[in-house]
Length: 288
Image (tube, rainbow, N blue to C red; front, side, top):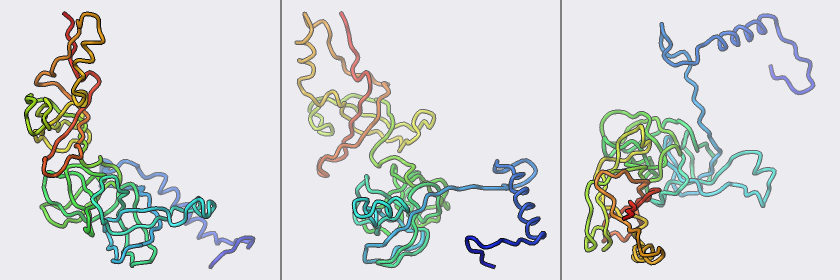
Protein backbone atom coordinates (compact mmCIF):
# COMPACT_ATOMS: atom_id res chain seq x y z
CA UNK A 1 0.00 0.00 0.00
CA UNK A 2 1.30 3.47 -0.90
CA UNK A 3 0.75 6.26 1.62
CA UNK A 4 0.68 9.91 0.54
CA UNK A 5 1.24 13.03 2.66
CA UNK A 6 -1.86 13.94 4.74
CA UNK A 7 -3.28 10.40 4.43
CA UNK A 8 -4.36 8.81 7.69
CA UNK A 9 -1.91 6.01 8.32
CA UNK A 10 -3.35 2.71 9.55
CA UNK A 11 -0.79 0.10 10.65
CA UNK A 12 -1.75 -3.38 11.73
CA UNK A 13 -0.48 -4.43 15.15
CA UNK A 14 1.51 -7.30 13.62
CA UNK A 15 3.29 -4.95 11.23
CA UNK A 16 4.09 -2.44 13.97
CA UNK A 17 5.47 -5.19 16.20
CA UNK A 18 7.63 -6.52 13.34
CA UNK A 19 9.13 -3.08 12.76
CA UNK A 20 9.92 -2.68 16.46
CA UNK A 21 11.46 -6.16 16.64
CA UNK A 22 13.72 -5.42 13.67
CA UNK A 23 14.82 -2.11 15.23
CA UNK A 24 15.65 -3.80 18.54
CA UNK A 25 17.68 -6.47 16.75
CA UNK A 26 19.70 -3.85 14.87
CA UNK A 27 20.39 -1.91 18.07
CA UNK A 28 21.61 -5.03 19.84
CA UNK A 29 24.05 -6.06 17.09
CA UNK A 30 27.73 -5.57 17.94
CA UNK A 31 29.39 -2.96 15.76
CA UNK A 32 32.70 -4.80 15.83
CA UNK A 33 33.43 -7.07 12.91
CA UNK A 34 34.37 -10.61 13.92
CA UNK A 35 32.87 -10.48 17.41
CA UNK A 36 33.73 -13.42 19.72
CA UNK A 37 31.56 -16.44 19.20
CA UNK A 38 30.71 -15.85 15.57
CA UNK A 39 31.51 -14.20 12.27
CA UNK A 40 30.92 -10.58 11.26
CA UNK A 41 27.49 -9.48 12.38
CA UNK A 42 27.36 -6.09 10.73
CA UNK A 43 29.73 -4.58 8.23
CA UNK A 44 28.94 -0.93 7.54
CA UNK A 45 30.38 0.83 4.53
CA UNK A 46 29.83 4.45 3.68
CA UNK A 47 30.84 5.19 0.10
CA UNK A 48 29.83 8.56 -1.27
CA UNK A 49 28.12 8.16 -4.63
CA UNK A 50 27.07 10.77 -7.13
CA UNK A 51 24.88 10.93 -10.19
CA UNK A 52 27.15 10.85 -13.21
CA UNK A 53 26.54 11.69 -16.86
CA UNK A 54 28.75 9.89 -19.34
CA UNK A 55 29.97 12.61 -21.71
CA UNK A 56 32.35 10.25 -23.52
CA UNK A 57 31.75 8.19 -26.64
CA UNK A 58 32.16 4.75 -25.02
CA UNK A 59 30.09 2.88 -22.45
CA UNK A 60 31.56 3.00 -18.96
CA UNK A 61 31.58 -0.57 -17.57
CA UNK A 62 30.55 -1.57 -14.09
CA UNK A 63 33.57 -1.30 -11.74
CA UNK A 64 35.16 0.94 -14.38
CA UNK A 65 37.47 3.89 -13.73
CA UNK A 66 36.27 7.35 -14.71
CA UNK A 67 37.51 10.89 -14.36
CA UNK A 68 35.03 13.54 -13.24
CA UNK A 69 35.12 16.74 -15.24
CA UNK A 70 32.67 19.23 -13.69
CA UNK A 71 29.17 19.42 -12.14
CA UNK A 72 26.34 18.71 -14.55
CA UNK A 73 24.68 21.93 -13.38
CA UNK A 74 26.96 24.81 -12.44
CA UNK A 75 26.09 27.02 -9.46
CA UNK A 76 26.03 30.15 -11.63
CA UNK A 77 23.38 28.51 -13.82
CA UNK A 78 21.09 27.21 -11.07
CA UNK A 79 22.48 27.33 -7.54
CA UNK A 80 19.41 25.71 -5.97
CA UNK A 81 19.66 22.69 -8.29
CA UNK A 82 23.44 22.52 -7.84
CA UNK A 83 23.05 22.46 -4.05
CA UNK A 84 20.27 19.88 -4.10
CA UNK A 85 22.23 16.93 -5.48
CA UNK A 86 25.75 15.92 -6.43
CA UNK A 87 25.84 15.25 -10.18
CA UNK A 88 28.98 15.28 -12.32
CA UNK A 89 30.01 14.84 -15.92
CA UNK A 90 32.46 11.98 -16.33
CA UNK A 91 34.12 9.76 -18.93
CA UNK A 92 36.64 6.99 -19.40
CA UNK A 93 40.08 8.54 -18.71
CA UNK A 94 41.76 10.31 -21.61
CA UNK A 95 44.68 11.64 -19.59
CA UNK A 96 47.37 10.47 -17.17
CA UNK A 97 47.00 13.64 -15.10
CA UNK A 98 47.77 12.64 -11.45
CA UNK A 99 45.51 15.48 -10.26
CA UNK A 100 42.44 14.20 -12.12
CA UNK A 101 39.30 13.56 -10.04
CA UNK A 102 39.00 9.76 -10.09
CA UNK A 103 35.80 7.80 -9.43
CA UNK A 104 34.53 4.22 -9.88
CA UNK A 105 31.29 3.35 -11.70
CA UNK A 106 28.88 1.21 -9.66
CA UNK A 107 26.88 0.24 -12.78
CA UNK A 108 27.34 0.54 -16.57
CA UNK A 109 26.69 4.01 -18.00
CA UNK A 110 25.87 4.39 -21.69
CA UNK A 111 27.14 7.45 -23.59
CA UNK A 112 24.97 10.47 -22.81
CA UNK A 113 23.14 8.65 -20.04
CA UNK A 114 23.10 9.02 -16.26
CA UNK A 115 24.40 6.47 -13.77
CA UNK A 116 26.18 6.40 -10.44
CA UNK A 117 29.83 6.59 -9.50
CA UNK A 118 31.63 6.33 -6.17
CA UNK A 119 33.59 9.53 -5.60
CA UNK A 120 34.99 8.61 -2.16
CA UNK A 121 34.99 5.73 0.29
CA UNK A 122 35.27 1.96 -0.06
CA UNK A 123 33.78 0.34 -3.15
CA UNK A 124 34.14 -2.75 -5.32
CA UNK A 125 36.28 -2.25 -8.43
CA UNK A 126 38.33 -3.99 -11.08
CA UNK A 127 42.05 -3.21 -11.07
CA UNK A 128 44.70 -4.22 -13.58
CA UNK A 129 47.46 -5.40 -11.24
CA UNK A 130 50.84 -4.98 -12.91
CA UNK A 131 52.99 -5.66 -9.83
CA UNK A 132 52.33 -7.61 -6.65
CA UNK A 133 54.08 -4.81 -4.73
CA UNK A 134 51.53 -2.16 -5.77
CA UNK A 135 49.08 -0.96 -3.11
CA UNK A 136 47.58 2.00 -4.97
CA UNK A 137 45.83 2.58 -8.28
CA UNK A 138 45.41 5.31 -10.87
CA UNK A 139 43.11 6.11 -13.78
CA UNK A 140 45.22 5.62 -16.90
CA UNK A 141 44.71 7.17 -20.32
CA UNK A 142 42.31 5.03 -22.36
CA UNK A 143 41.97 2.30 -19.71
CA UNK A 144 38.47 1.14 -18.76
CA UNK A 145 39.61 -0.01 -15.32
CA UNK A 146 41.99 1.22 -12.65
CA UNK A 147 45.68 0.44 -13.10
CA UNK A 148 47.84 -0.52 -10.11
CA UNK A 149 50.70 1.83 -9.23
CA UNK A 150 53.31 2.60 -6.58
CA UNK A 151 51.28 5.68 -5.62
CA UNK A 152 47.95 7.12 -6.65
CA UNK A 153 44.62 8.61 -5.51
CA UNK A 154 43.02 5.19 -4.97
CA UNK A 155 44.19 2.81 -2.26
CA UNK A 156 43.80 -0.94 -2.80
CA UNK A 157 42.32 -2.43 0.38
CA UNK A 158 41.90 -5.99 -0.92
CA UNK A 159 42.32 -7.75 -4.24
CA UNK A 160 42.35 -11.19 -5.76
CA UNK A 161 45.77 -12.78 -5.77
CA UNK A 162 48.12 -12.64 -8.72
CA UNK A 163 48.60 -10.11 -11.48
CA UNK A 164 46.33 -9.12 -14.34
CA UNK A 165 42.71 -7.96 -14.24
CA UNK A 166 41.48 -8.60 -10.70
CA UNK A 167 38.39 -7.83 -8.64
CA UNK A 168 39.25 -5.61 -5.70
CA UNK A 169 37.94 -3.41 -2.92
CA UNK A 170 39.43 0.06 -3.09
CA UNK A 171 39.25 3.32 -1.16
CA UNK A 172 38.56 6.06 -3.69
CA UNK A 173 40.48 9.32 -3.21
CA UNK A 174 42.15 7.91 -0.09
CA UNK A 175 45.63 7.41 -1.52
CA UNK A 176 48.49 9.71 -2.39
CA UNK A 177 49.14 11.56 -5.63
CA UNK A 178 51.40 9.48 -7.85
CA UNK A 179 55.01 10.58 -7.61
CA UNK A 180 54.87 11.69 -3.96
CA UNK A 181 56.45 9.74 -1.10
CA UNK A 182 56.29 10.79 2.52
CA UNK A 183 59.89 10.16 3.51
CA UNK A 184 63.18 8.52 2.68
CA UNK A 185 66.73 8.10 3.90
CA UNK A 186 69.95 9.32 2.28
CA UNK A 187 72.18 6.40 1.26
CA UNK A 188 74.87 8.32 -0.65
CA UNK A 189 75.80 11.76 -2.00
CA UNK A 190 76.51 12.72 -5.61
CA UNK A 191 78.83 15.25 -7.21
CA UNK A 192 77.93 18.42 -9.08
CA UNK A 193 78.61 16.83 -12.48
CA UNK A 194 76.25 13.89 -11.80
CA UNK A 195 73.84 13.75 -14.76
CA UNK A 196 71.17 12.09 -12.62
CA UNK A 197 70.76 15.31 -10.65
CA UNK A 198 70.83 17.79 -13.54
CA UNK A 199 74.32 18.99 -12.68
CA UNK A 200 73.54 19.80 -9.04
CA UNK A 201 75.17 18.15 -6.10
CA UNK A 202 72.54 15.68 -4.99
CA UNK A 203 71.79 12.49 -3.14
CA UNK A 204 70.66 8.94 -3.64
CA UNK A 205 67.67 8.38 -1.36
CA UNK A 206 65.98 5.10 -0.42
CA UNK A 207 62.23 5.49 -0.13
CA UNK A 208 60.75 4.23 3.12
CA UNK A 209 58.54 1.23 3.79
CA UNK A 210 57.93 1.92 7.48
CA UNK A 211 54.15 2.24 7.79
CA UNK A 212 54.44 3.75 11.26
CA UNK A 213 56.12 6.87 9.88
CA UNK A 214 55.24 6.66 6.20
CA UNK A 215 51.56 5.93 5.59
CA UNK A 216 51.81 6.38 1.84
CA UNK A 217 55.10 4.64 1.13
CA UNK A 218 55.74 3.62 -2.45
CA UNK A 219 58.68 1.22 -2.67
CA UNK A 220 62.14 0.86 -1.18
CA UNK A 221 63.92 1.73 -4.43
CA UNK A 222 66.91 4.11 -4.33
CA UNK A 223 66.27 7.23 -6.41
CA UNK A 224 68.32 10.32 -7.43
CA UNK A 225 67.28 13.40 -5.46
CA UNK A 226 68.12 17.06 -5.26
CA UNK A 227 67.61 19.12 -2.17
CA UNK A 228 65.07 21.90 -2.73
CA UNK A 229 67.42 24.28 -0.92
CA UNK A 230 70.28 23.42 -3.28
CA UNK A 231 68.40 24.44 -6.41
CA UNK A 232 69.52 27.99 -5.78
CA UNK A 233 73.12 27.77 -6.96
CA UNK A 234 74.25 30.85 -5.03
CA UNK A 235 72.65 29.87 -1.72
CA UNK A 236 76.00 29.17 -0.06
CA UNK A 237 77.36 32.60 -1.07
CA UNK A 238 74.21 34.37 0.10
CA UNK A 239 74.45 32.83 3.56
CA UNK A 240 78.18 33.52 3.87
CA UNK A 241 77.88 37.14 2.69
CA UNK A 242 74.90 37.96 4.90
CA UNK A 243 76.64 37.09 8.19
CA UNK A 244 79.52 39.02 9.79
CA UNK A 245 82.78 37.24 9.10
CA UNK A 246 81.02 34.34 7.38
CA UNK A 247 81.03 32.31 10.57
CA UNK A 248 78.17 30.04 9.49
CA UNK A 249 78.56 27.57 6.64
CA UNK A 250 76.11 25.12 5.13
CA UNK A 251 77.19 21.49 5.12
CA UNK A 252 76.01 18.56 3.02
CA UNK A 253 73.56 16.22 4.74
CA UNK A 254 75.25 13.02 5.98
CA UNK A 255 74.32 9.50 4.91
CA UNK A 256 71.49 8.16 7.04
CA UNK A 257 69.61 11.48 7.29
CA UNK A 258 65.84 11.17 7.07
CA UNK A 259 64.35 13.48 4.44
CA UNK A 260 60.91 14.20 3.03
CA UNK A 261 58.50 14.68 1.55
CA UNK A 262 59.94 13.38 -1.70
CA UNK A 263 58.26 14.58 -4.88
CA UNK A 264 59.00 13.65 -8.48
CA UNK A 265 60.02 16.63 -10.59
CA UNK A 266 58.40 17.18 -14.01
CA UNK A 267 61.61 16.86 -16.02
CA UNK A 268 61.76 15.83 -19.71
CA UNK A 269 61.46 12.09 -20.31
CA UNK A 270 64.90 11.91 -21.93
CA UNK A 271 66.48 13.17 -18.69
CA UNK A 272 65.06 10.30 -16.67
CA UNK A 273 63.39 10.31 -13.27
CA UNK A 274 64.53 13.00 -10.84
CA UNK A 275 63.11 13.66 -7.39
CA UNK A 276 63.35 16.50 -4.88
CA UNK A 277 63.03 16.63 -1.12
CA UNK A 278 62.68 19.29 1.56
CA UNK A 279 62.80 19.20 5.32
CA UNK A 280 62.81 21.71 8.13
CA UNK A 281 66.57 21.52 8.65
CA UNK A 282 67.71 20.78 5.12
CA UNK A 283 71.31 21.65 5.93
CA UNK A 284 73.39 21.08 8.99
CA UNK A 285 74.74 24.37 10.34
CA UNK A 286 78.31 24.44 11.65
CA UNK A 287 79.41 27.29 13.91
CA UNK A 288 83.23 27.44 14.41
